[in-house]
Structures are given as C-alpha cells and as structure tokens.
Length: 294
Image (tube, rainbow, N blue to C red):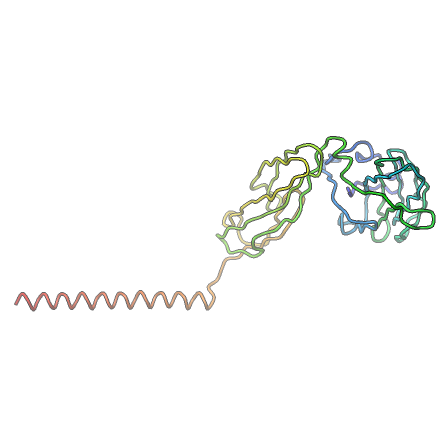
C-alpha cells in the first residue's frame, strides 16, 4: 500500500516530520486540510510518479509479511531520495545523505523477522528525478526467502479497522448529447476486518451534485452507480470525480447528421402521403354522398 504525497521540506521532513501514517494505522488521515488514503500498489519496484502524480513529496509504503520462523533477513531498499524503514514499529534504517537518480537495491539492511506477522513501513522522499522506490526481503546472497506470505491488508483486519478501496470509475459514454443521461459506476471494496459505512459524493467540476451512503461488510465489494442529467450540467468538457477517482465527460449539443435528416424526411413524406390519401378518400365520400342525394 502507498500513501502520499505529504509535504516535503527536504531532509527535515524525512527525519523530523512524523506524518500520521508513522504514528498510527488508519484507513485515511486528515493533514493540512487534505484527506490522505492508502492506495494499492504492485511491487517490489514502485513508480511513485505514476501512483501519486508528482516527483516531489513524502510517501509511505506499507506491507505485512508472515514468516514461518524467526530469522534474520536483508531488507533491500531502493529510492531516488532519502528513506527510512521500520520493522514492527522499530526504526531499523535511516538514510538521507544525497539525492540522485533511482537505483534499485541501493540499501541492504539486516533485520529480525519474528515468527508470524511482521509490519514493514518505509518512508521515502521524492526530490530528485523520477520518484521511484523499491522494497524486498532477501537472503544475503540475493535469493528470495522461501515461505514468506505478503498481505498489505493484514494490519487492518487484525486491528479491527475497515479499509475501503474505490476503483474502476467508468462512464456509460464519454461524449454525450445535451439532455442525455450518463451512468457513472465504480467499484467499492472493504478489505478490512469490520463493517464500513462510507458517504460517496459525485462531483462535477468540483461541485457536489449527488451523494450515496453505502455499507460494506468485511472482505466484501459492490458496484455503485450514479446518474448524471447532462441538461443540468451544460455543454463543455467536465471533470467527474468520486472519492478521488476522476474521469472526463464531454457534453455537446447534437447537430442533425445526414442519417437523421433522411429519417426525418422519410417520416415527413409518409405523413404527407397519408394526409393526401385521407383527403382523397374524404372527397370521394363527399362525391358519393352528393350523387345519391340528387
């Protein structure tokens, strides 16, 4: 799991600013007027530029590893700036001598793994070049350790905390005509150990237009839907956002294409022919009625 970017005062933030993730475990944190949430990341090498949208800041990497026995291992770290690491909430490494391009497997740190679950928290600084980080557990010869089981969500289940993840925000259409309705869907999952209640707000260009309250049982998921009435939003390119997930919606005033014109003409011709036919029948009836009366 990854969270950030928190503010970076260069090396001072790395060593002196203890941001909430290194103080306690929670699904989200409020800091500096902003809400931070853990997001899934697949490693061991992480492109934080892609994940966080910047090359500057402080980020935390969190994972839990199950060891079948107590052992010594190498915690192998890579970063493009300074970094710190904790194993089971004990600081085991801190480095901030210089900033340079990312190099995988830069630091080899001997750590003690307990039998059972172990918490690994890494704090990394983005300040130079593309923001990257890596984290592995290896033997001294660089070989992977057999029998380890990784589960980044273990701590949330053990602590009896919810962990809601949102993803796959999609629109039923990315270009819609004015007056049409667009369905917005996203997936919500609770990866934690207790039920979670969450208020989701649909925002268009930063303004809330709808909300839904959902409840998720532990280890469950559901698909959430919202509907946008484009006539209430107006023409133009709009940013659709739910829980930090964003998509673009373009609303246009539909012009009649050739197919629509031909369809309209065909319908008009049919109506005209029907009227002509009805008028002729009416005249014949009047003529027949006049002949009989004379």
